[in-house]
Image (cartoon, rainbow, N blue to C red):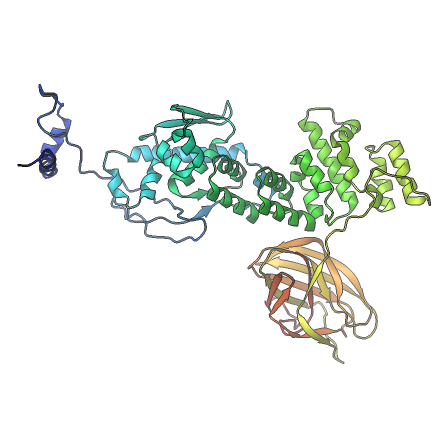
Length: 552
């Protein structure tokens, strides 16, 4: 005797072997129920199907290593496997990295995902599409932003910009413990639509793309909003990728904004990175547009920072710029009194008594933000023997202590000339940790005191990052003499940079010798190699630019 399961399998095999014409008619014929309530033949459940080949998406099994694999063969069958990728630009401007709610960027991202939704729904033409994909990851990716089998919908975004996005409870619960509690926990509610007003649609879709496709798709416009979504729904690997993206794009222009966000998201590593940039490049950071966008608590933390590496006048001017922006945010009249009002007690964190007297007299004293009594007391503090008590901090900031990487073991001088005469001394270097090059230490005259004119430059792959044209005085000793850039230059690890100087002055000077290719300086390792820009004899073994002065 053959049981019912065996009969069904035989019928199924028979149907699959039928000619297409017969099978087509069978599938199109109406189903008529038998008196017993079941059909005489089992229904046709499987069809021989074809699937139009589409461009293979890059997948992410883990966050960083990228390994390409064969793509689809164009004949309708998908032969490729997944590819790990992290996408997105690393713009360093505050406008791009901090404006996570940019309408243009998020809008285009949502349109891109909706197009994928349309492509997915058009592709799924019958019920054996699963057989065309070799991995569960690829099959799940087909479900991303797809109405097929969707059992929940999300209304994402604030009123006026809401997007209705499909979801699949099981896939979401596997990807997030929050979704698991929402759909399968003890307090789960069987709602068909869930409103999420505090997440941007583009960021929510980026999170869904990671959950469904194991693909990380970040951009400067959406990364902060995506980090918020990843934190809210506890998707830690996506959150880590967002933080890595932000660290990569970190610069003086967006460091203050990212500091504010890193504290909000409780990301201590990102917070520390932001402080490193703000301390070393304080003047650039405080004068950036992003500084005016920070909250009052972050403002206070910056104003009381002991290691800010800038003049106090710059700190004062930055605080006034923030006050103007805060008045506009609060929609109050832009006046001197209101600036002082929005600054509140934070004004006393500015160390006004540590300014040079000229800076105070021509700047803070005439700004109108200080009261007449405060201005008078500070003038007395500068000049009087009996100094009045002030509410302002009067101890100068410590700033950062510069470190020096010395690459020669000895120095010497020749009886003949070193022959500068407009020629370039240059060397290439790389570091294993992020540092900030503040200047070079240079040799001077070996025959008494002399003054040199120096044009120093720092380049990366031919792109000029920092320069200065200045003078320095040498006293005839074999010491090195510092020459500074206008602003410290941020140096990323594992990339070679070119340090160059063109000197004009006494040609009888000291030069370095017994140079080394690798120098350990504190926690930073420097590697040196010869530069093709060097036309005056400087190289790894000897020459000029004996020191790199840096903050780390």
